[in-house]
Length: 279
Ligand code: GLN
Image (cartoon, rainbow, N blue to C red; front, side):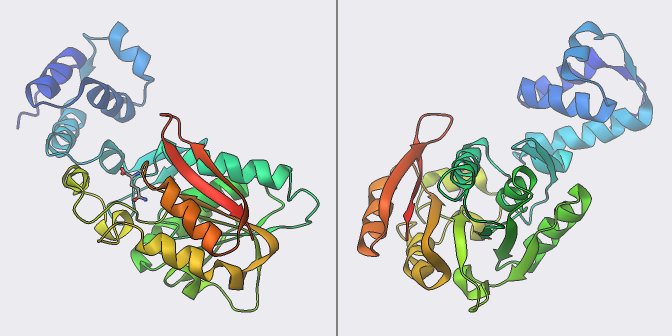
């Protein structure tokens, strides 16, 4: 690895020769040089000093090996918040913003009469959903749970850094929620990819625990829906993210458990991505 001074154009060329996607390479360069991405095109001849170019070269190696850019950068934007992430947590996806938008709509609509609504995010990972809800709705009292201690550490650090008070508890799905507290709104983006989904190979850098429960991919969704009645306020809502082909299965689960007002929403890509209903 050379540490000689190199230019923006050299570095983008090197990224291309390593098979790193152009947009990823640009974002990486922009991040390391602390410039907007638009600056790069106008400054292809700008020199990058030795230490920075060595760091960039090392980051390009990680990108070329298929690691998500968010891990390489150590951060990911989600619903207007910059979250720190590492390989202990799923990279927050723009798809999941649809779940947050729906939650905020309910808090401003059907749940608006509730003063200090209690919200829980089951399987919070980086804290993305819980923190985005608390950020947009400071009136809500938000609990985030995760079975992974390492993930909770990431979520706690994000909460502290963003100055967003969210309680965090360790445990599996409803197992982490206090028995003496009922919620007005429960949210979850659980693992839902089927165990034999070939798509998992491309996601190998992310925690498998957060991606798939094995089997048909529905085990975690079943547990969450099955336990909801004991933990939701009467009239409380449950909103779930799921696979693009699981909407009907999740709607059936909600019907089986006597939910009403069952609805499915699409993600930014137009796929059926979230289903929810009222207890
Ligand atoms: N939407 C993710 C993907 O397929 C999976 C997230 C999840 O299982 N919760 O890339």
